[in-house]
Length: 240
Ligand SMILES: N[C@@H](CCC(=O)N[C@@H](CS)C(=O)NCC(=O)O)C(=O)O
Image (cartoon, rainbow, N blue to C red; front, side, top):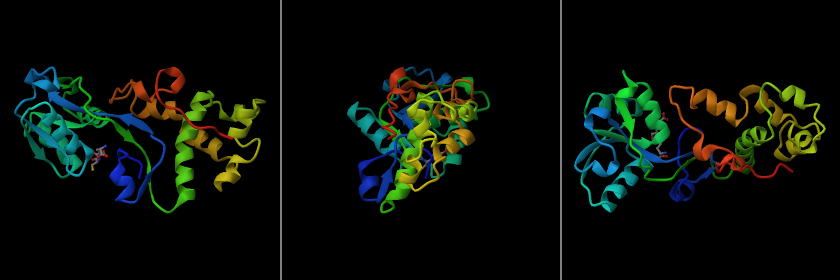
């Protein structure tokens, strides 16, 4: 599963899952209509709030309001598709979810500018691809695929220049692209595994900017998801 699922202790243990490297560091926020006149989550006393059940979202919201001695009325909506409909129809004052998801909901509003995401981020939501316990090779492949996307960005390799990069004499690039063999065999894959990923879908930056970045309807900034040497916390492990 590769979507927007948060890595948690109980999911990894009780539910028997392994979360691979984070592909998006998110956090929970609140989306409100501008006409509500609210500028901060601390002003949401007594608000009705649309939320999806079974998510980390539901518990975080309860924790947040309890910790701040505020009352709230959850409006639990079972289906994601119904969530924004309920919110836009005025069934709740506020919608709470991961900020990336709030940006997605807002982007389908009749007039997205009528809605704002409040400044408070009330939780950490490390979103990762997930595999079942007990399939270590598959876990390695998924985990190192996320890191390959980041490593390619770090080395300046993208879908447009990857063919030319095959001629590079930089030993790190040669090992990464399988010109010097070893990494593919170690994963049980073709030596061109990382080359194929970058050639077909681009590096992390290309994927980010074409799907959720500044120039898309979601308009998200890289923020924490920038590379470690550019002010973020994305730090792929060593390819050797
Ligand atoms: N990150 C939170 C929330 C994730 C979330 O809302 N996931 C599902 C519902 S269970 C969803 O509808 N996501 C929106 C989507 O996939 O577009 C979690 O892991 O609990």
